[in-house]
Length: 182
Image (cartoon, rainbow, N blue to C red):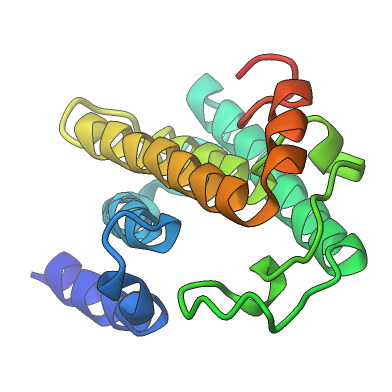
């Protein structure tokens, strides 16, 4: 019962942040909502294990993945703010202000991966799952990962629509989530 209450209460801000995206099914924000909700399920059902058995191998891997997630999101947001030349001309309501860039960013972490914030969410999803891995919540982690992939694909389509050939050229030089891998 406590898990259901926690999930419901914590879903309220996610719905509030995501409501504009519900109007555009198939946008990256639409998929982001489902990814965040899946991550919330993992968090609510794994929070009690965060500090349990801290030296088990899966806990060590989990903490490493959490630090990678933090690094990806910090460097990604900083690069967007520093080099993105945010513009109000991109008046898509589902975009956060730091996403309204007016040029393709292909330096810093973006030189290697197109979606550092999504990579962060991918690492965060699996880090939370690894706090106490089991077969019951494994499908939730997979579900979150699938929606991250769909979110990235939708975002790439939106970027191609806005930036055109510049973004297509950039896609050929970078990977989606993990540098030099995928």
